[in-house]
Image (cartoon, rainbow, N blue to C red; front, side, top):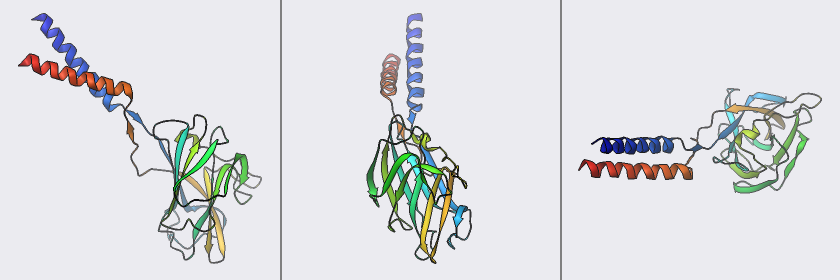
Length: 226
């Protein structure tokens, strides 16, 4: 009887361990940088959105739970409804710059991409950034551009880095250049936002093995109870 009781407790412990291991899977990290008119540091902002704090463009960095490769999605929202307005330039920073590669994934593409280390000024006043994308008019409201960024050990959080200040200002997480409206343009800095998408759950091999042990333990318990 005592032996049976000990085995039953062991099986229950293994089952519980596998359950909690399955819950604690590796979690992908997301970093979102939002852009609104309230972040303008040069030029004249478009008439929309009417509320200066409303986000009209965003960049989301997703590392998929790993390192060395991060997906960047740049989006222009439909609330940038000023006639002719689009986002031409996007500037970002990365820890341990420069990136080792930038590859087009989907959406709108551009061949005009800069990669360096504290090398690119946003309008000469917005700091010195590590990499930038330049779209000649195509990234209009309702459109996205997706690229895969590669670099040694990079994760989504690697892009939570500010630019080196230029002589007249800077120190921004990111910057965009809005053009195409009313004969003018605006440079706008970004700030950390809250990603809408839920981080993906990626089960680890050890987790899967423990989960299997748990199922076997549950099966053994049922057979003994019968």
